[in-house]
Length: 416
Image 1 (cartoon, rainbow, N blue to C red):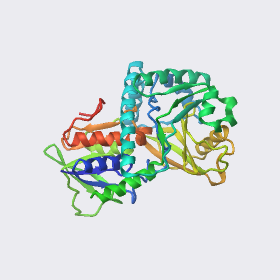
Image 2: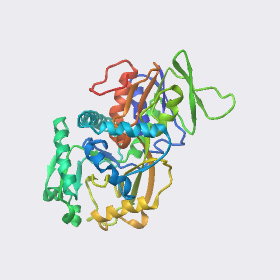
Image 3: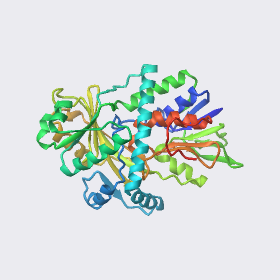
Image 4: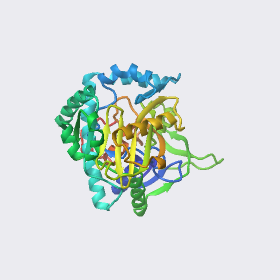
């Protein structure tokens, strides 16, 4: 069976790998001239099962008015008349119900644990090196209310198998001594020793090279202009604008285009609950090793993550919905740097700071869209939001099982 994967980010390339390992002929298509050139290029770097609490919670709903009124808040909304955005926001409100939050946490933990195990097996089997660190993830809190909420979230995650341990300030400093520079601010922490971090861009490039060695074909720098259908199935995909150019043919299709998936699916009368959420990252060299963090961290109050990638520091986060573009907002960049300097003063060389922004494909529940569609040969592997790097390997392995007619190994609400 010939399967075409549309999208060459970390999600698309891992899906291609597992499909090829399952015996499929695989072609990967992307509009960029290299893999991992968009959302996977400079993300936060975390493999974070412990980041399983969705954005949509009762607490977030209460904070939403203040967030939207504050230009420095983690979430920013630019109103637009697009009905899809308002449907998404209404669905987000619905996902804030406690019962929905509990279900979403359970599913995110289940997929996260499975995906982390798949990544570890893949790394060992292929000898991949991507500045990975296996020293866990520490969630730090400088606000007492946020810490109380974190203790409740950690308890729920432990119930579902994620060992997220609550620590006092001294125990947090023992895990990451570089926090001593800001110890007076810290009221507590949680720690997940089995979580990891690493460079998603480097991982995707290396895995793509292994895919090519096994016969996967990559059609890069090829714009996708729409599907051709017949008798209720996908017959081809139109590429580029060349007059008379034949459509790409395949037996099955995997839509893994991140934030662009919803627009491509819309002419097929498929309404995917995906909105582009603009996020930012800052990367700078280590300036003072004694002040630089070694363990990956999450700052839940400001919705930021911190990862050590070799001799680089990566800080990423925030979300902007609505009229988003790929222009850097200097105020958001300054916010990243200011919070980093507050927690780790002098750790990085700010004179060499490089900023980046990308569009995360976010769903109201934070659950990705994985599985079948009403078209019998079209499958989804998209909508991973901030957890694309965390869930990529598990999603790809499960998707390959579904395409090949096997039942996935985990209990997850796959699309049917």
